[in-house]
Image (spheres, rainbow, N blue to C red):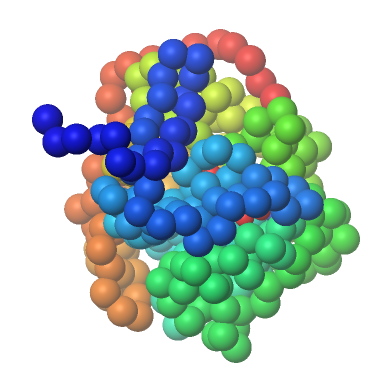
Amino acid sequence: MPKTEHWQWYVEQFGPTELHHHAIEETFFAGRTAFQEVAVIRTAAFGKMLVLDGDTQSSQADEKIYHESLVHPALAAIDDRRNVLILGGGEGATLREVLRRPDVVRATMVDIDGDVVELSKRYLPEWSAGAFEDPRARVVVGDALQFLRDDRDSYGAIVSDLTEPLEDSPSNPLFCDAAFADIKRRLVPAGVYVLQASTAGFHNMALHAKMSRTLRRHYRFVRSFYAHVPAFDNDWAFLACSDAVDVAAVPRERIEDYVAGLRGESYFYDAETHVRLFSLPLYLRRELQKDGDVF
Ligand code: SAM
């Protein structure tokens, strides 16, 4: 075994009995903003990483797996992509993926923490890759829930890239019936609401199932999908919600056309990956069918 003593470690605590260790090569920033603990580090295994309140948000090595999965199945499913809203998404990578479609006329990103956005611009420019300077991008620093309540616009897609809704997280108020209704009010009738929706790992899928159960009270189609994200050391889940379109059943030719219309090269998502994202193991399908908690 190689020696480990000389490293400093970032320890992500998954639960009372589960710790994941990452050797730190460099710390760019570590401190507290008005909303959360922030660390921007470079790890030996995954390159640069953003960590909020002790949770890995994304890593240089595999952020495209997460961000392409979050954005593209939903955008492939809708016809009208002119106006897209992003809730959270501080690193700017969700914005980057949305703006890869030339038919997006305006992408509005609302993140509560201007310091996270600025730190991402400074230390993680690979994530946004110029998206913040795109004239179609509108970045609002503010609470997404307040924004949804004040805004009068309608969006073809609303993409939620918020932190986990833990008790003391600023994202927590966006996970309840009232907030889900606020989100739906801003969606066009044929639109899709897609969200990062916690883990789909066999030992910690309860929160995902709770989100799904709650959202099924609001939408006709609520589809779970997931990708393995190595830096999270977990299967990461998403939910695609709509009254008009079943994102799990988008025809292959439609996805091929959509992907062909993306600017730049994709890393993870195409028509083949779409099928894999929505193909769920039996244990997860069973969990989703169970009765249980709602928000
Ligand atoms: N991939 C991520 C994960 O694994 O949880 C989410 C990434 S992104 C960095 C999460 C963003 O949500 C952060 O920048 C945070 O500031 C933002 N956020 C949390 N609560 C918010 C709120 N109420 N309104 C707007 N943005 C919020």
